[in-house]
Amino acid sequence: MSQRYYEDTNVDDELEPLERTPTTDMAIDFFGRDNPTNPAFSDIEAGKRLGVGGALVPGLMKLAWMTQYVGDWAGLEGAVRNLRVAYRRPDVADRPLVLAGRVVDKRVEDGKPIVELEVVMLADGQPSTRANVQVELPQRG
Amino acid sequence: MSVPEQSLITEEHRAHIGRKSDPVTVVVRDEDAKRTRDILNDKDPRYADGTGIAPPYVLAIMSGGPRRGMPQILPGGLLTQQEWKFSRPIKIGEEIQAVSQVFDIRDRLGGRYGYSVLVTSGTEYFDKDGNHVASAMITITQFDPKAGRQGDE
Image (cartoon, rainbow over all chains, first blue to last red; front, side, top):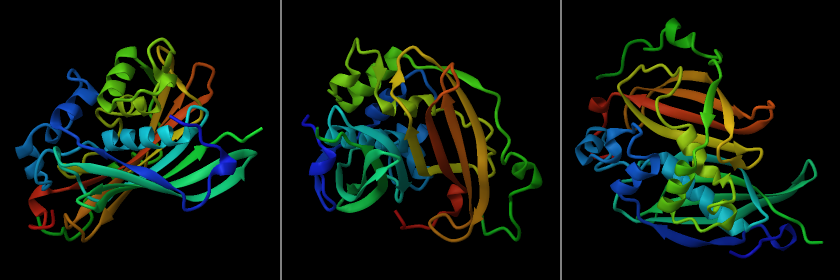
């Protein structure tokens, strides 16, 4: 994990894409097997009854992946401050998802160096989830 | 279900808007932090064993489960929007007070499920000194699965 600095970050910088394949086991284990969750996370038929076409990938797990993805990009001295996510289409388990992102703004806000990113999760090349993420980055010197 | 002639949102439902829940104590458990890290294969040393710091996405576990105070108007529900804010790192073992409220309930016509209801609620998390730790806002689209359009998926 390399450190990202505010001064070295520019609008239109792109994050390296990352592929993840969610499974039904992941969905259940993520929340804990002793915790109640949506049956559609593990049951293909329950997902189909929701109109999803298979077992549903939990939105909270996708948001967690996005948080990790941006946190890794920012580095150890960076901090994810805010994520605003729109789930455009449900995702189905066992199908690969690709995380991608780019810098859309940078500014000093209340004395804090903030970089804003647009992050997407792509399923079959189409965005299923979009996020705007604000990250606080360290400044050199 | 066809499109109803009038909104299914009643005054009883609307009465939830703006009503804050009693504070609920949430303890950030080491096992939750470790399990979620393992599932995501997160090697970030800030959240490694022994640091006492949970990865920020442990908020998913703190905010999961039944939605406190969120009215159920239609039988199906999908998460459609969400926002997380972090004021500081979340510590393992600390007791956090969670206060939830419904912000908005509105009808929606058209789209994948025909008539649906959007319910937006949020939870604020404070430490024992009353300092803000994090917040989570969520919009659930409630719908009748039987009314879904075929072939949209």
